[in-house]
Image (tube, rainbow, N blue to C red; front, side, top):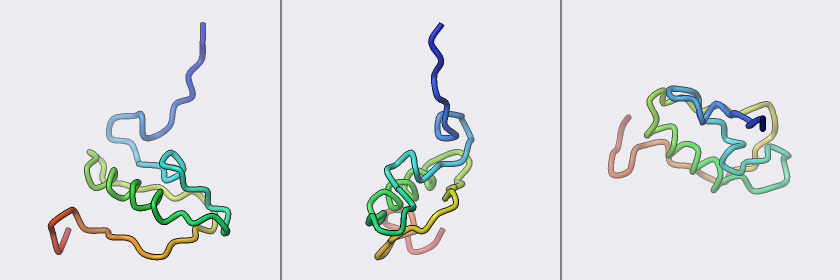
Length: 72
Protein backbone atom coordinates (compact mmCIF):
# COMPACT_ATOMS: atom_id res chain seq x y z
CA UNK A 1 0.00 0.00 0.00
CA UNK A 2 1.37 3.42 -0.98
CA UNK A 3 1.28 6.26 1.49
CA UNK A 4 0.23 9.74 0.45
CA UNK A 5 1.52 12.88 2.12
CA UNK A 6 -1.53 14.86 3.27
CA UNK A 7 -1.41 18.62 3.67
CA UNK A 8 -3.94 20.83 5.42
CA UNK A 9 -4.97 22.12 1.99
CA UNK A 10 -6.22 18.62 1.10
CA UNK A 11 -8.60 18.49 4.06
CA UNK A 12 -12.01 20.10 3.46
CA UNK A 13 -12.25 23.13 5.73
CA UNK A 14 -8.55 22.94 6.61
CA UNK A 15 -6.16 25.87 6.69
CA UNK A 16 -4.33 26.85 3.50
CA UNK A 17 -0.58 26.33 3.97
CA UNK A 18 1.52 28.91 2.11
CA UNK A 19 4.27 26.32 1.59
CA UNK A 20 1.85 24.28 -0.55
CA UNK A 21 1.72 27.27 -2.93
CA UNK A 22 5.48 27.59 -3.29
CA UNK A 23 6.44 29.93 -0.45
CA UNK A 24 9.80 29.09 1.12
CA UNK A 25 10.05 31.32 4.20
CA UNK A 26 13.84 31.30 3.88
CA UNK A 27 14.20 35.09 3.96
CA UNK A 28 15.92 35.36 0.57
CA UNK A 29 13.44 33.92 -1.96
CA UNK A 30 10.77 36.37 -3.12
CA UNK A 31 7.59 34.73 -1.76
CA UNK A 32 5.19 37.41 -3.03
CA UNK A 33 3.50 35.36 -5.79
CA UNK A 34 3.23 32.24 -3.61
CA UNK A 35 1.77 34.16 -0.66
CA UNK A 36 -0.72 35.92 -2.96
CA UNK A 37 -1.78 32.58 -4.43
CA UNK A 38 -2.25 31.17 -0.93
CA UNK A 39 -4.27 34.24 0.14
CA UNK A 40 -6.48 33.87 -2.93
CA UNK A 41 -7.02 30.19 -2.13
CA UNK A 42 -7.84 30.99 1.51
CA UNK A 43 -10.37 33.63 0.45
CA UNK A 44 -12.13 30.98 -1.62
CA UNK A 45 -11.87 28.17 0.91
CA UNK A 46 -14.41 26.95 3.44
CA UNK A 47 -12.22 27.88 6.41
CA UNK A 48 -10.79 31.13 5.05
CA UNK A 49 -7.68 30.39 7.11
CA UNK A 50 -4.14 30.95 5.85
CA UNK A 51 -1.25 29.29 7.69
CA UNK A 52 2.26 30.72 7.41
CA UNK A 53 4.64 28.27 9.07
CA UNK A 54 7.52 29.73 11.05
CA UNK A 55 9.99 31.50 8.77
CA UNK A 56 10.95 34.80 7.22
CA UNK A 57 8.91 35.60 4.13
CA UNK A 58 10.21 38.12 1.58
CA UNK A 59 7.08 39.85 0.26
CA UNK A 60 6.77 43.14 -1.62
CA UNK A 61 2.98 43.58 -1.49
CA UNK A 62 -0.18 41.46 -1.36
CA UNK A 63 -3.90 42.04 -1.79
CA UNK A 64 -6.02 40.57 1.00
CA UNK A 65 -9.37 41.56 -0.48
CA UNK A 66 -11.48 39.33 -2.68
CA UNK A 67 -11.22 40.23 -6.36
CA UNK A 68 -13.31 43.29 -7.11
CA UNK A 69 -14.03 44.05 -3.45
CA UNK A 70 -12.80 46.78 -1.15
CA UNK A 71 -13.54 44.97 2.12
CA UNK A 72 -13.74 41.45 3.42
